Length: 229
Image (cartoon, rainbow, N blue to C red; front, side):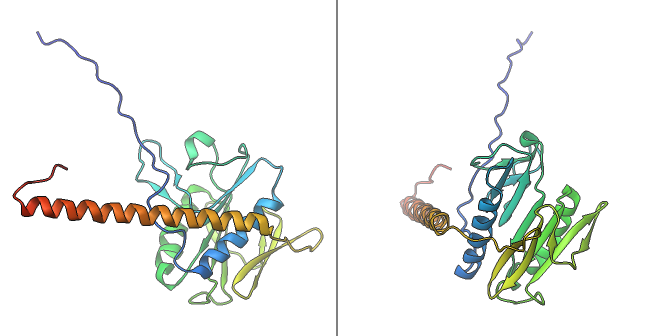
């Protein structure tokens, strides 16, 4: 009779980074920074977080099912930094998501992500095209009505109580109650730029290490030695 030996439960890893850069151009990075700095200052002191380019896991046990919105606003959660965001732990999905789009990401942003966010119940989904590559007027929003997204035609964000306005290659926000424009903290913007630079340096180091490992593996194979995986 074979004795039963209990096995340890498998630990599922939910990575916080994939080594990819924050955005494809400095124009897109500046647009992201302007949005998150304005919204973080505006929402300060509330039970809400504003995250940027962080993994959003939406299915427990399936770490490949993830997305990394350029900016997401999540209400009714404890404020503070997150390495990543797991919907089943926090109990909330984002209320508003912004994607800084381009011709290169057009289909993914307009079709795949739009369908995904609609199915998740994200109340508003905004696409901002800072270079004006494919969106007329540079801005397109969708608002959930029932279970279906409808185009936003009034330029308003209902969850945020803000009016959105494109100014050059940036997206700016105005309070609905006073008409006051949300200002960007230079100190916070600088901190976010430094954070982006650190992330880029980390990505470069990871790429250099990958290349070094590939060169070493090639040298071993040339010597008749098969490297271990």
